Image (cartoon, rainbow, N blue to C red):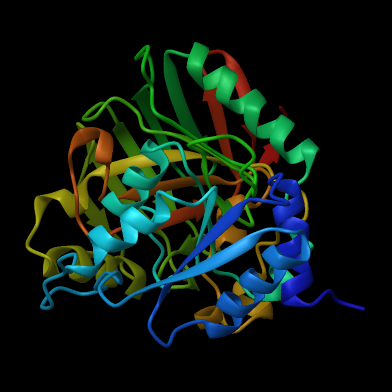
Length: 337
């Protein structure tokens, strides 16, 4: 029998070493995802912890230009309350992944976990020690590396500089058991932010690759030319190329064309078919990001380059070969690490 959402939160809190005498803060948006809010509170209480719900009204980002997004006066109060918590659960609709709210909470040493997927996805893809081992192995390889190269039979071939001693790396294994750590449940994903402006080459999207947050699969090939870290050409005869050109140009912002983080998935239970099995509008898309052996890259926001834009695309791709210097970590879509 599937676990209830409250039981899943209780299991998650145990993974995060949350228990008696500790306080969990649940950040939510007014009137949104109330079942997650209630389940998080119940889960915290079931492991002996206490919980407070922090409800805001100004956190969601726009998905198209025209509505200016600014943090409201409720955010300072929210941050002050979150600072009193041992762990923060983010169940906002869009998530605080690229928000200053997130960085200020984790920067103060608080743990933070974003939760967005349906309950059966959360149960099927809950974090494990093996997923963490795979992510940490990828992290160590990236830290020691100088160059990331990605190729594919479809024509993808680009390089990125990852030689910085301070290379920003995102490690996601689906739970937070360390101070100052952020993660996303579910996850099994490792990524880095290459030296800004260093990505050069060609990325060719193939049918079956995914476009997030559009929550759909690519239908026709799209060829993107990357020069000095920016998408300079989007070529293709199908609707995907046309929509990408239209969407990015609509913002009137050079930052939307920038490459951001890139990496690969390691979760053995994650499936490419998620957008077919579920109503894609109920999914945040984390399962596609985490598929074992994928290559995922993104456009837009990069806080390490002081670049902010709400026009952020994540694009998981199948069948790629990923090499860090001379070490192949994914070959033709199969994880080797």
